[in-house]
Image (cartoon, rainbow, N blue to C red):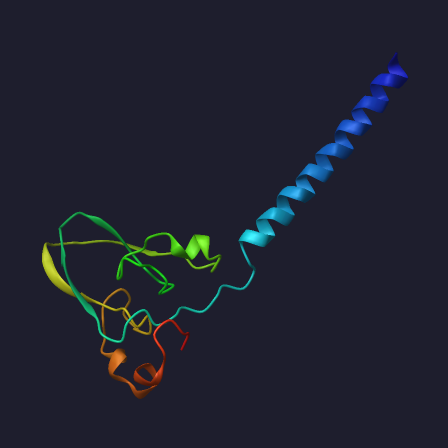
Length: 126
């Protein structure tokens, strides 16, 4: 009886290792080690009304269909990028970046006017 128990334990441990390997190989497929580059969503910023105390998720990857905010496209397209979460400190109109090249994310800093951004195709990385 004890030798059968040992055999069952070894089989279970081996199965556990295989399951763990399968899980990690699945994770590796979904989450690449090197994040994708952000793509130009639009070549002009978007004015939005921010409400004080509200938490927003600004699209970093440029693939969202709800620009300038995240719709989860980064996850389903396996970009390795995550949205930038920010809380509005006051209710106001803000100009948010959609070229994804700003140095002041999520706010527009005028980078979209540069030749580099203007020559880029919408949907392509810079």
